[in-house]
Image (tube, rainbow, N blue to C red; front, side, top):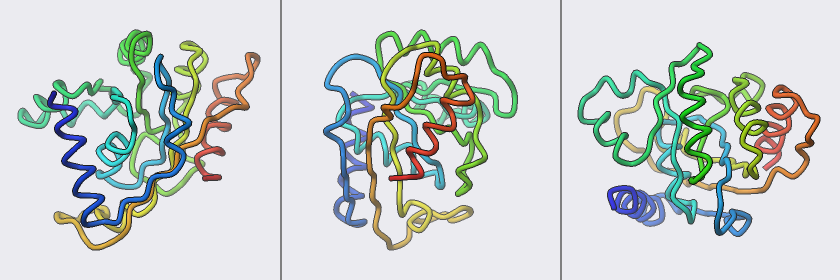
Length: 189
């Protein structure tokens, strides 16, 4: 209930004030699990992508965000899995794999806010290979203008989210191969 309410509010704000445009949402599977992999340039990205996705998704987010009691409480209620950044957090990846048996999962392969598509973490390749679920790429435009790094308030701008299935992942691909293919798809959108 809290998740649906939150995504409705974010979607409404983005549509009314930031001319939200969504393309390719029809490629998102109607049932079953999938990994939704998106670029990450702003704190606005997780709520923007989830509000544009027609299905509820779980998230992976850095563990230190849970240090704030109010934010941590909220994030647990909407389905955020904490992960330690800059380390191989196998515990969090196991939780994510278990969650992928029943629910879609949103992940930001870059691991942090950056416009660099080459700076990625191998977790996306690991999750793809181990879960064997479809991968949907999402490219987010404009959130870095609406809520740039260091800003405390939203600014005028347009937000656009494009979805597309990653269909070139092979059984023999390594984690690194998968990671590159997913990031190339996101970059191409």
